Length: 285
Ligand SMILES: Nc1ncnc2c1ncn2[C@@H]1O[C@H](COP(=O)(O)OP(=O)(O)OP(=O)(O)O)[C@@H](O)[C@H]1O
Ligand SMILES: O=P(O)(O)OC[C@H]1O[C@H](OP(=O)(O)OP(=O)(O)O)[C@H](O)[C@@H]1O
Ligand SMILES: [Mg+2]
Image (cartoon, rainbow, N blue to C red; front, side, top):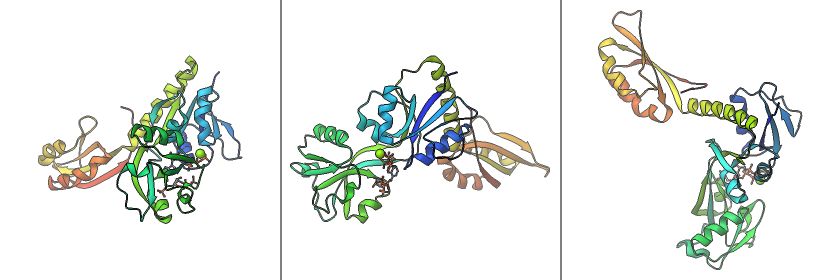
């Protein structure tokens, strides 16, 4: 029976979350051992642990069927592979930065200047689209030190909190792209592997959906239920159960994590009491 080969980063910013996602899908992986390839004991997948930059090539070649990488690495690779699912973790951006004391006018600042980056393809496309004529200096890591050692006038690198820029005396001046972890495939899977991927995607979506939602329970006097129900945007209509206390009910519903804080005050004002909000592990809609 065929197995779906999944390439994930061996060690780095994507590793832990990639393994966590696989495990949250109920796919068991043997513990540790430093192996670079491992098989699940309860789902037809093999996991390959690789450098993230190598994953696009392996997926393109069919050595791996799917892979987890940042959108930045996908775009830089210029491979003919496609995103099957955005995974929502390792959110960051690729930005241009210059020494903080520079009085930066606009993108034209980079005309005739040298810019250091590990993303020469993305950056040259970006400069071309914006009619900027700059020299791109490729360096594979520690890009933030380039201006300080006189290698370049600016850099283009990953920014998340901004603390690496700050500690190297740089400031972000232009966002080139946003990125998050994505699941990619070459799109040439044989039927049996595609069926495994479909099963995996179904589980990933259930896990993702659950993370975006919370299960809410509250108590309220019966005469206030109508008003409370109108405040709660649920999956379907909420469940209402009578409480032992005469004239009171317990109401259960599912609510978007992003909406929760907006509606909580409205619920209290409408007479809700004993509000409990609990995480959902999986959600099939
Ligand atoms: N500070 C950050 N916050 C959030 N996401 C990040 C951050 N830095 C990088 N990423 C994302 O995680 C991916 C992997 O980053 P990491 O720094 O582990 O890569 P790397 O050093 O190239 O690793 P490798 O050794 O596998 O080549 C990046 O391509 C990017 O999409
Ligand atoms: O804006 P920040 O939150 O500071 O994050 C940005 C930094 O994070 C990444 O490096 P990482 O820490 O993964 O180390 P690496 O360069 O060794 O990959 C990236 O290359 C930046 O240097
Ligand atoms: Mg890398």
